[in-house]
Image 1 (tube, rainbow, N blue to C red):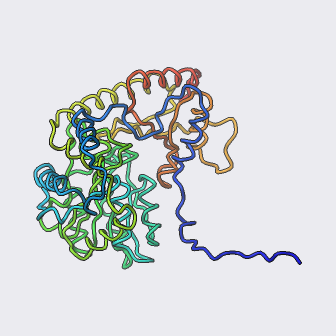
Image 2: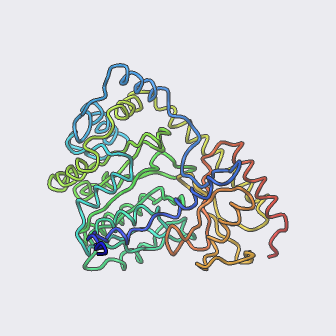
Amino acid sequence: MAARTYTLPVTHHLDAVPFSGIIRIRDMMYAVKDPFRLDQGDVSFDAPETVKRAMHRAIDENRSHYVQTTGIPQLLDLLVAKLRTANGIPVGGPDEVLVTTGGIHAIYIACQALLEPGDEVIVPDPEWPPCMGNVKAARAIPVGCPLHEQLGWRYDLAELAATITPRTKAIYINSPNNPTGGVLTRDDVVAIANLCRERNLWLISDEAYEDVVFDDAEHVSPASIPGMYERTISAYTMSKSYAMTGLRLGYVALTDPKLRERMKKALFYTATNVSSIVQYGGIGALEGSQESVAAYRRELQVRRDLFYTGIREHAGGIFTGEPPKGAFYAFLKINPAWQPEQMPSSGSISWALAEFLISRGRIGCIPGIDFGPNGEGYIRFCFARDRAELNGALESMRSVFASPVKR
């Protein structure tokens, strides 16, 4: 008698949450010999000595046991001081801060605590893919609102207001923005704050790149606007400011006690507590000199300018775009005159050019379509790599684009 087969019941809502194309690109790059890794949003700097010494000390002192779910008290106190002074947020005390396993975890627990099935969240387009993924993972609906290149990759505020519907629960902003490098002005932030108050909305503020601003740009934390801390969830990471990407240390601040309790549950059931050793590294980062943060920013601006000069000189007219005001990405428009030898089945020109640069030039990059429909026709490069790698990628680009596009 043949054995019976059964189909086991499984939930399927996560099937609607796509993996970012960044994962596909990363897998492709592992097959490339001597690649230029301009696809990864990772700096080439090392974490400050204060971070490494603090982690070594924690290991030597056997700080390898469970700690408080929301964070080590000493770290929480330091974060409160930082949020009050650097961000201008009126944080009441350490119970209003939760330590997370990186910035993406902060956004995840915020979405799990705030959103119900069918809620809408307005998100930037283009935007970092895990933003939309985290909204979908909470069974809510991300609704894109375009960022406009001619506005410095900022919103048309009237268009943003028109995107709000009766189902809108929150507006998500990411400034400085990944992938575009756009930075919202103080007037933008105030206008968005007013929208949230008028329409009774939450604001989720992803401030991962708060310390990476260039030229005359200013980073403004929305929760510092009078009356906005009560309706803002502010998410941060130490990955960018302190070159701690692999250590996975972030934090989130909010004052609403009911929402905070829900987020604490999501934190407990996904991490119990963030790695004790890593948290001591965070203590070292905040207690030590902040000169490394300023030094990283100065060097990133040099690398930005080097890369954009190289693009003008070596890319054969394939790319256009102004240097960003923040973050460390070049989000460049593809010249429509460029045509691939074979268009991919997706019909995406940004995927076609990304695959061309990887296969012909060993240059890692991310197709703009991966960041949302408004990103199609663009490519993202990370210029946070060291100067030698940037120069190597530019020289390779010169070779693959040896025949300039005719304008």
